[in-house]
Amino acid sequence: MKNRLVMWGGMVAVLLAYTGCGDSGTDGPCEVSYAEPILEITGVADAGSGEPIEAIEIWDVVNDRDAGGSGSPQMYDAEGISEVEGEGGRFLCEVPCGFGNQDGVFSFEFEAPGYQASSYSVEASYGGSEGGGCPVTYTDGTKITLELEPEE
Image 1 (spheres, rainbow, N blue to C red):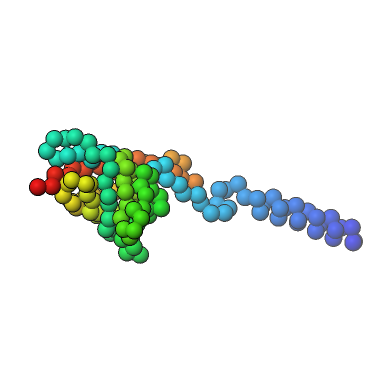
Image 2: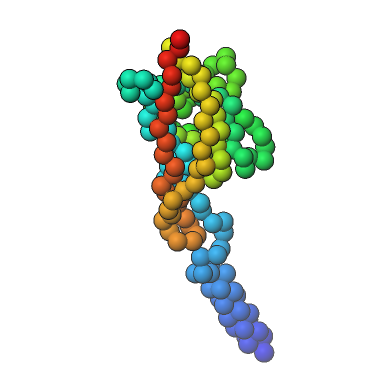
């Protein structure tokens, strides 16, 4: 009788071990990653001459879906962006640059030396994904080009 209980207990332990492994893909957290930022500035040009501008400063960045209202949504996911020291909330964008990973309407101010400050607003989203569920990698963020008017 004791041997049967030990054998039965051993079978139950083996069954639990196998079912606990789970091959359904639902065990643990779902991995979500981003192949690129959701918003990429691919170029900035002089509005009159079309000459490229290599770097701009960006500030007052807001995403309408940013519940925190931080004024700099997801700059931690930035590429080609660095914070301008001593200028709280200003970021240097060395073109091309990109930021964010949450869709929504992004609004921001930007300027470059010798140019007038300007505002821009765009709805940004990912156009594709790889992986088809969980895990998933989002791809094809929104790409924009900007223009600046020279100072008068």
